[in-house]
Length: 242
Image (tube, rainbow, N blue to C red; front, side, top):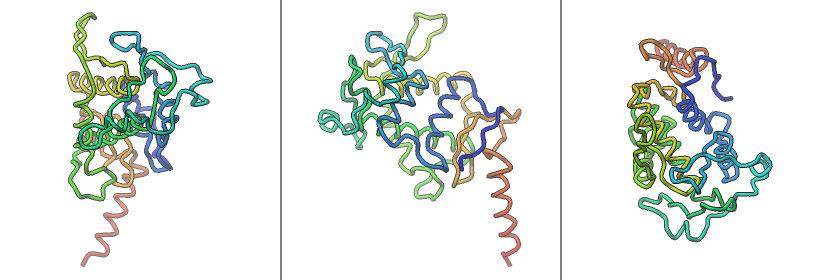
């Protein structure tokens, strides 16, 4: 079962979206296993780009298209495979300008690379850095894959608003969405709130959450679930260790 979500877990809107993105893989399974599922998730979170806008303003699909997955190709496009990036990170297939083919297998793979990279970063915020190999619920190559992916995602400095900010500069819908979340990470780092973003320290969980505690010392998704599980294991070790 997925870890419980308490009202106090809710992060500021942009960071809450990152929490929900990371938590698409949880104890009850992975909820982003097909391009259609990714398309629906991006649409539900207002992350689909309008290719007619220079900075890629969000534009949602209608509910029928999102529900039917009619704008999805389940198989990887030939040009996407041919243009695979360094270290196996697939590049965009140039799908902008059409609702057909918004998300393909390459786009799904890029999204999963970012998701697991973010999970590793959140685990690091919780004093549990990724070390390979380690059976800790994290991809030991998550940082490497995420670093390669971030080199491919275009962000530019937008100085047209009240405050300068990083924004996506791409006409690929998936890359727009991923770059938007990266921009949200950078904004949180600048605001000093990024270190409140954590992944549960329990290896079998890794549920993402926003730490509202005053001293930023929260460790588990829930003391009643993972915190208690760790206490039981520690107690068992004390009883059985000579």
